[in-house]
Length: 441
Ligand code: 2IT
Image (cartoon, rainbow, N blue to C red; front, side):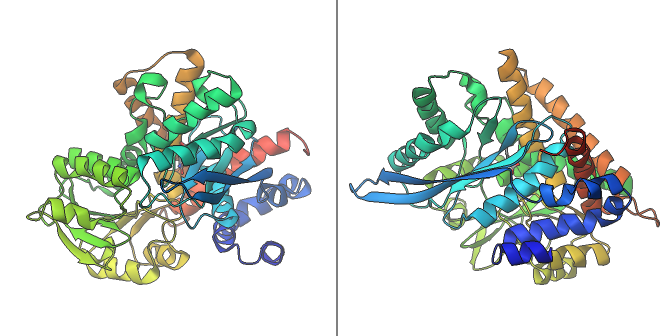
């Protein structure tokens, strides 16, 4: 860590993600001298390569805009590079390195053969029109197309990138590459190679994982109050499944504040989240404006200020602080499943784990999204499409298996399960073993 800190000062998210994994794996690493001999850790923390490129496009006023685009190909030990694209004004190489690093271990947990990658741009979708989004996506692909391919690197969505953006990017990819293999991107439209349930999969998977977490403790989601942060694709899927399983979603939030929903979110409100996302206004207050009797907006507050049983951070890294964790506990919360990547600050995780709150990390909880991307790749490669039921059965199996891996590697001497350790060690062992078997490359 000291060497990395000196080499990459200021890359705080990246250093945070690496530190968490290294702390988790220290013990098993020391039991495997062959890993040390082959310098597995030194090789694993460094991305294989990073592409960085200028993206210039013209906005609706006819003005020329310039952003920076990136693709971080992190690790290919267990398969081709796989991971999403993030469009957000705060995107930096540090953010994408942390996400690519996390992705490597997450993908290893899915049981599917996928390496880790991440990419994106500091382009800010907020306030952009549909035409501007299209022109940006096309300009972005003008550079990205040369770095990706269905057997090399398969991007998908992340914050700020959904079905609409994937569509625009694929359209441009086809023109540039003269390749008509839809398998180069996942999260596509259902009529042109997209997997049924991919849009829902991250949220659905998170709730399946939560069920696997609660059942051994003799608990169930049914009847629980759930607080959700965000209102994007992940929060949307989580709300649908929470409702289906009989839970009550009592809060959703955005950068502007929180909407308390005392009687629980309805299907109509969940559908409206899609309208809010497509509007690019990035305001959760719009929910309270649309449904004034059901949702009450408070500016500047987080979802963690609303009393709940289960907290589901579904928005952004480091969105839940130690103080938030304490407020949750004081308000009766007893479980936090991290759905966003690195959504909880280290102090919050430490507090949960030492105060009897069930906690599971993003790379286990949210892996259903990329796992279903993996299922989309399989369907594309076979030129077939599976039914929703087939995909859902596989998703159930995958989340169950991820939970089992966490238990296998995370069970402590006192019988409790450290899900952070479990997920990190399980992912690490798979990637490290593959690297060892493939020699020093
Ligand atoms: O963080 C993630 O796992 C994603 N954004 C999904 C990546 C993917 O390739 O589906």
